[in-house]
Image (tube, rainbow, N blue to C red; front, side, top):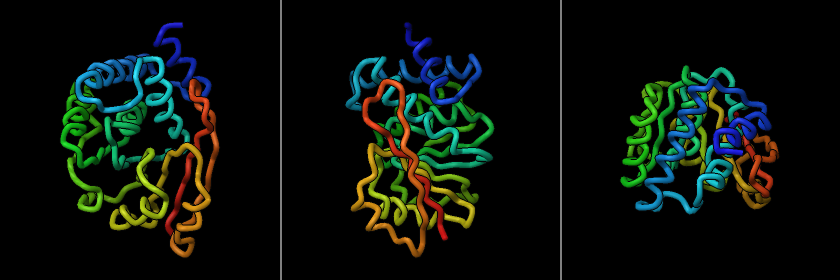
Amino acid sequence: MNLAGELRAGTGALGITLQQSQYDQLLEYLQLLEKWNQVYNLTSIRGLPRMLSYHLLDSLSVLPLLGNCRKAIDIGSGAGLPGIPLAIAMPDAVWVLVDSNARKTRFIRQAIAHCGLKNAQVVQTRVQDYHAPDSLDFIVSRAYAPLAEFCDSVAHLLSPKTQLITMKTGLKQEEVRQLDTTRFTFEEEKIKVPGISETRSLVTINPL
């Protein structure tokens, strides 16, 4: 099966259906990432088939949890993950991708232009220093920080309706114990992402 077929099969297994133009954009992004990665070492995952599973499909796995999203932020975006795949899949939602690393934000800026994304922007700063001009529906991260640190770093961005979602390979009990349950509730959903042997966890956190 070619890369396009693997992408369609993988999204289908996750219960996700996209337009042909979106599949094309996702592959354009992946190929650009693979090209830049050879020079700038943006990610430790190598080879397009593995990158498709560990980056595209893993990022898209959170999509079913993002209903009614109008504006969201991806913190610690790195190479634009999960923000760029989600911006491609959700053209009616505004995505802000925040990372403090100049090399990575330069790539994100290029990827946004390369894919023709009108609903995504990148901000080079620490998330603690970023102030959203409008309220956020979702704050998303992937392998960013332990739960308590994640919540503390975005506390200034929260509104009563803001949901936090973090993507992890397993949720450690130590993380759960450190989370302030007088301020937040959380729910863990374990999923299998095609091409990834490890069980992935999607953790949704709601401010009280």
